[in-house]
Image 1 (cartoon, rainbow, N blue to C red):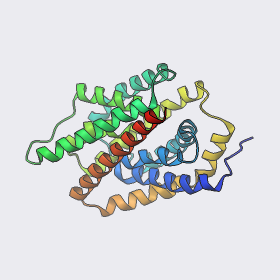
Image 2 (image 1 turned 180 degrees about the vertical axis):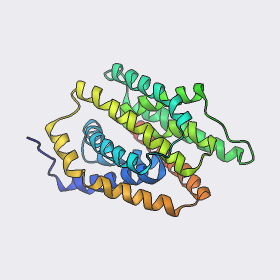
Image 3 (image 1 turned 90 degrees about the vertical axis):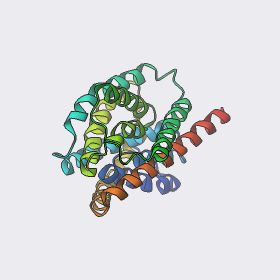
Length: 256
């Protein structure tokens, strides 16, 4: 019998968190959605927040695939899929020894350094990068690992995809397909490690009706934003997510 969380304060954080995750998946491809788990963690433990969000993210992935089923950069996905699975495997076997705070600091630093580097270079006239087996494998492995540990797989994917400056719809579709793979593979080790409880699954079920609302909002916003503004928004979310990860990581280390 599923027993969802009943604390009203929890839902004050969880409802906007789920909507934010849906908007990110439906329209902006990643970083905004990674704010959802830390927001839920304001009222519960980080591990429980991650367990609650994973089934909801999986439901959103199905909806995202329906919307972007033919819209993705297949050459990039071919290069990214093996690394993503490898990263999840690494995360599974280091689950008991890896510090979540260290991972947050690492990925937050990467996100901010990448964004600042691109702002300084202002390399709009530089030819867009193309798909790369080396970069795709490395960054997708980092993404699979950080996604497993903290649902923070967005920034590494963006470090790889943003320099390619692909069409905004292909960009979002590529991230939808990528995180569909990542999240469904994560279900296996999450279950094996005992991350799911009747409370977390019941709460996921209670919040699930918000998933299509968030995806719909993301799709509508995606249609209304032009390409130049889209990429400015993505870089803004990336640096905000990086700052949030750094703050959470250092706060955790200091508290410990």
